[in-house]
Each structure stands twice: as C-alpha cells, then as structure tokens.
Amino acid sequence: MIKRLIRKVFGINRRDDPTVLSAAQHGIARDQISNGARKVCESLQASGYAAYVVGGAVRDLLQGVKPKDFDVATDATPEQVHRVIRRSRLIGRRFKLVHALFGAETVEVSTFRAGTQDAAEPVPDHDAAVDEHGRVLRDNVFGTRVQDAARRDFTINALYYDPVNETVLDYHAGVADLRRKAVRIIGDATQRYREDPVRMLRAIRFAAKLDFSIAADTRKPIGELTDLLRNVPASRLFEETLKLLLSGHAVACVRKLREEGLQRGVLPILDEIAAEAQSERFLQLALAQTDRRLHEDKPISPAFLFATVLWHGVRHAWHDAMDQGARPVPAIQDVMDGVIDRHNDTLAIPRRFTATMKEIWALQPRLEANSGRRPYALLEHPRFRAAYDFLALRAESGEVSAELVDWWTRFQIASSAEREQMLLPQTAGSAPRRRRRRRPGSARPDERGISTGTAASNADQPPADGPGALTRGDGASRGPDAL
Ligand code: ATP
Ligand code: MG
Image (cartoon, rainbow, N blue to C red; front, top):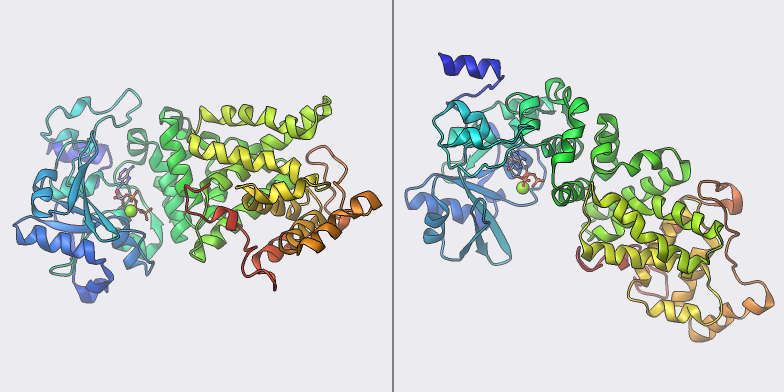
C-alpha cells in the first residue's frame, strides 16, 4: 500500500509482470541476433541462468534499424558469466561487466541491476546512492529483472529478447511507444534527470536517430534542468556529445539540442555560431558531411569533427590576433590553446584529439599561402588531407575562395611538370592568390561565385587520373583515433 503510494507520488509506473510478445507478434528473427550474443544467451541459459539481449539492439530490430552492437543482461554475476563463457574478461572497477569475445565481436554482458527508484525496496544502503542534486553516485547494486527494467532510461530501451524461446519481454509499454514513435522516460522525468542528467542528451539522441518525438512529460523538465549538466564530469559530456555527433543524425541532434536549450550545457559555442550566418553554414556543412559519411559506412574522425565545431572560436581569435599585427601562421598557433581551454570546463576533448585538431587548424594559413616551394612540403604533411578537406568546407561556406581549393585539388594530382607550371605564375602574378583577409563573418557569399557543393563534389569524386586519391574526408578516414 505504502509502496504503491510512493510509486504513485514519484510517478513510477512499474509493472512486475511484463507483456510477453511471441515471435509472430514482434517479428524479430533469431538470425538477426549476432552470433556472439546468441551464443552468450544459449550458454548462460544452458547453465541455468536467465539471459536476454537487451537495450538498443532490441529497440533497433523492432524498428527495422540495424543494431550497432548487442548487449546481454543476465542474472548471473560477472564471475559466474566468466566461468560459463571462457573467452571473456571482466572489466570495470565500479561496476563489473563481462566482455565475451567471439572473433571480431565483443558482447557486453551485464548483471541485472537495481536503480535508485528502488529506494522504497529493501536494497542495501540504497539511500546513500545519490548526491544532493539527486545524481546517481552508485548504481552497482545487483537486482532482479524487474528492477533492471525499471532502472533503464526509456521505455523503448527496456525490452528483453530471449533468443532461445524467441519472446520479447516488455515491462514499460516500450513496444507501444515504438509504434507511437515516442521517447518516454521510465518513471518521473525530473527525478530520472536529476539522477543522471546525461539522460536528457540521450533523449535527444534517440529522438533524432529514430525520428521520434520526445513525449511531453519526458520533454517538459528538460528546459529547467539544463544546468544539471554542469555536475556531469567533462569527460563524460565529451563522450555523450561525441555519440550525438556520430549518431548519423548530427544535423537533427544539433537542431534538437538547440530546441531544448541543452547546447548551453555541452557546446555553448553553438549559440555564437548561430549568430553568424557563415559560421552556421560551415557547421551545417560539416555536420551534414559527417552524417553522409556515416550513412555510406565511411569512417569519421572525431578530431576533424571537433575541429569544425570549434572553428568559429579559432577563426575569430585568429583574426583578432592578426588585426593586432600578428602574422597568420604564428597568430593561429597562439590562439588555438585558448579556444580549447575555454571549452574544456564544459566538455573535455581528449588530448589525442586536440593535438590533431590543432594540426588541422595550423595548416589552414599555410594552405592559403600556396606559393614558392611550400606546397610541396605541405603535401607531405601527415594531416594534409584532413586540412585540405577542412579548407574545402571553409570554401563551401564562403570563407575562402573556391579557386584555392580547386588549386590544391589539381596540385595533388598534377605531374611534376604541371606542378612547376602551377607554381610558376606566382612570379608572373597570376597564381591563385590568397583572398584579402576580412573580418570573420563579413564574407560576401556572392563574391567569386562561391558555389555550394563545388568543393564537396570536387573532392567527393575521385579525379579521373587519381584513383580515389581525393575522396573527400580521406584525411579523416583512418579510423576514429587515426587523426
Ligand atoms: P545505442 O544504439 O546508442 O547503442 P543503446 O540504447 O544500446 O543505444 P547504450 O548506451 O549502449 O545505448 O546503453 C545500453 C542500454 O543501457 C540502454 O538501452 C539503456 O537501457 C541502458 N542505459 C544506458 N545508459 C543509461 C542511463 N544513463 N540511464 C539509464 N539507463 C541507461
Ligand atoms: Mg548499445
């Protein structure tokens, strides 16, 4: 009675008996489950444990989307899982998980957990598990399947698929929400965001990825709780923001972030960018290119991506330094760290990425000075391709001339004789000269016939005599950590 009252007050809409859907009802075929996840479930069940495919994979399969990966939840403890599945390793300190290894596939196996909503339940020490903002400090309490379903974030993420008997267990009407195309939080939205503010960002990501709307009650408190993101470690915010940008729906994610005001908590620079047409154009081109590459299964470099997002800040600081009389190359070198530092409190970009971002930025003024012998040296630079792709985006947004990018496109594939020819006019005065420097934001898009798409299509299509050499973004295509 009291428990029921507490649940009602806190809006916890938990049902202990799930809706069970048969194969005919849910339509997932067993062979849509990865080999590894299926084997993990079969082995654990054969040893007497419960084991299900959970989370995003079930949601995506029901939605006809190819799952990114498969996670398994079980009532076996990590040690028990490790004993049943020999090729596996225990990971994590705070909360142990098991990684089961099947060739190239790694299946993450987690033990059912209880969440803080279960404070009303006899879970040991549970009332000490949140801080003064309601944020979860500890969610390392094993739980039942019912509790495991309730601690998950959204109804559409709390679905359990049993590949042995081919049923789907639905505790929170997630299947109905999939049909309604709604992202709905489990329990009371304010409380769940207080426990973990990152859930607000996750709501945005799933809505954008699935083209769903965020249910009214789930959406309502977001505007008031944005500040809670300040309590989230900057490294976690980086990871979550990266997931948004690499969701394949970055354009939609950024639009939704702004609609909900959440950009203030993760990327405040998005407001400055919105205020300047050219910067906004540059950002949108970069995000759209990222989405396109992901849909084409091409790799993406987080460093390149974050270099584009912060470029607005670098460009302004750079131009300010040049207005004070600094020369272009040293000027940009001097301002880069400041721009990165300014963002680090909110969102900590790992050093392995900032190093590459700085190289891409530092090459910009050098690409603009394409005279003398310098272009030869630049071609050899390990970040040349990424920097060239970056320059192409700048041209497409109207910041530098399309001719400059075109010159570099031709220079890369030209023979030695042609290259000499291209460099000769420098003295004759007809080389593609750097555009006269203007204040950032004062670009005149009509000048020099900035043709939308020119740079991208130039680079997107392998030149006839350079087999694929100039595929746009190739510089950013050596695996996520390559740059
Ligand atoms: P994706 O397609 O991005 O992998 P996903 O739903 O699988 O989506 P993960 O981050 O892999 O997302 O998390 C797996 C599952 O763990 C989620 O489906 C959800 O049930 C649960 N989960 C993850 N993060 C949270 C969170 N912050 N709060 C509550 N539940 C969470
Ligand atoms: Mg997942």
